[in-house]
Each structure stands twice: as structure tokens, then as C-alpha cells.
Image (cartoon, rainbow, N blue to C red; front, side, top):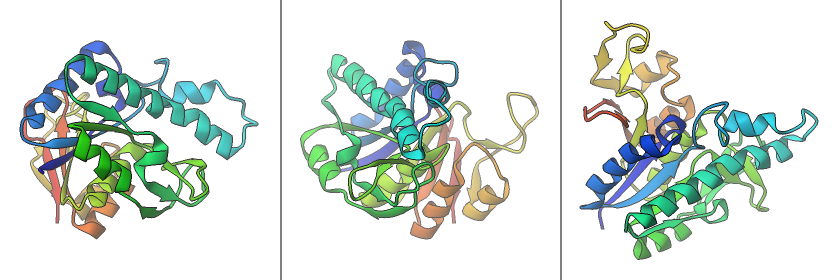
Amino acid sequence: MNLKVMKFGGTSLRSEATRKYVYRHILEYQKTHKIVLVVSAMGRYPDAYATDTLLSLGSEYLSKEEKARLVSMGEQLSTLKVCSELLDMGIHAHALSFFEAGIFSDDHYDYAKVLRLDGTKVKQALANYDVVVVGGFISMTPQGHITTLGRGGSDYSAVLFADMLDLKEVDIYTDVDGVYDNDPKLNSYAIKYDKLTYDEMLNMKSRVLHDRSVEYAKEHGIRIYLKGTFSGSQGTVIDA
């Protein structure tokens, strides 16, 4: 069974129009692979279900544990929305809850440290479905309390799922088609890198990828393909 982990960020998922581009990528790879599809919360503030929008609904007096529960609703909703649309398209998809995802952490609720991975439920789902949709950003304590992996943590989740499945590569899609030496939205002469080492990527202090995802990928030898949701280009490869 060929497996692939694909992660899509909030700007790729924010509307029906943008999600059509996401599903084109899914349909292409679904011909030859079973897919673990890692999704972020839909959109960016002030979109209704974005992480910062959800956070703005809560009081500053909420505990970190309560805030983690609040913001995790974005990914949980995104998981079910994307799964629903895949099912409507005739794709044999299934949405896993965070209880089943198998990422266990300590109780630092807003920037949790991962303690162990358990791929049992993910592998069982892959045996029965073509696309398994999971929420990024969310982990849980051994006692079953929701924790989160920090801002941008869905990138980290994608690499964790790849490791969980003994894969040595992961595809991470964003609204830019790779890593550039300058912001391509502000500088039309920005140059895209075809390949970067893990250390080069970390030294750039780029917000395109979560540092924890690159650090974990380096430690476990997982190649990251950073691609554009709205582009057909090859993007940037982050490797040793």
C-alpha cells in the first residue's frame, strides 16, 4: 500500500473556491496512494473558524487548558468539513478525531512536548478508507486532555504523522509555491529555492514552515516537499 501524508494550511482551506484546488491535488495522488490528509483550521482572522477568531471568543481569564480546547475546535471542524466534501465527491474518506490520531504530549497546553506516537487507529483507518482526514495542531495528554503544538503546529503534525507511518517524506502545501529569498508577495524579483538543507531552512527564520517541523524532520530523516496549493510547480525540497 503506497501511503502519502499531505498537509494543507488555513488559506488553502478558507473557502469553497480555494478547497477546489486542494481536492485537485488529492484526486491526483489518490490514483496511486492512500492519503493521510492533515488540515489546519479554515482561513485566517477574521474568518469565522480561524484559530485567532476562535481565540477572540474566549475571555483572557480562561486557563491554558480551556484555551486549548477552544482553539482546537477550528481543526476539528475543518476535518469534518473537508471529509464531508470528499464524500460528496465520491471519495472513500473518513475523519479521525484527535482521540484517535495518536499524538500524545505533556500538559503544556499551548506548546506541548510530544511524548509518543501511536499509529494504531490511523493504520486501521487506512486499511478501510482511501483518504483519512486528521486535524493538525492538536495533541492530547495520556489522560485524554486536549493540548496544542504551538502556532503553525499543523506543519509539525504532518511530519509526526509521516514518522508514525514510517514514511521518509511529507508534502506540505501553502499559499506560496516554495521558499523564497524574499517575500514574493512584496518583491516580484524574489528568487525561489529548489532545495534547502534542514539547517539552511532553520537559519532563514522563515515563517513558511514551523521550526519544530523542520527540527523533527532533520532528527528523523524525513524529506519535506513544500508546495503551493494554487500552483503546479515542484516547490522547494528540504532535505539533508
